[in-house]
Length: 75
Ligand SMILES: [Zn+2]
Image 1 (cartoon, rainbow, N blue to C red):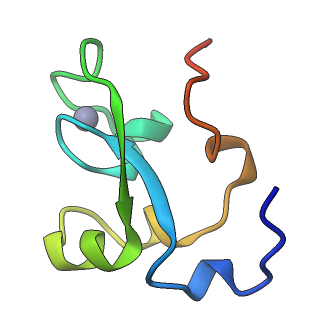
Image 2: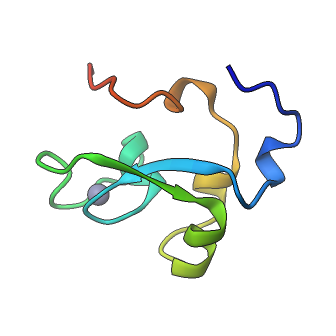
């Protein structure tokens, strides 16, 4: 629904992350943590994730439309 061409560079953009380890990579299944199976997802802004420094910014700065929607846990 969001048609923002500059979304990838917006620090206020919200990213879906794993609520156990707070990384987008885990939420995407790229690099899962120990609690991945029982954890849910939560939203953090790019600025917050930058502050945490838990993972490479590449994991949450890139725009991936198919991972934006929360509530889809079919895999
Ligand atoms: Zn995790």
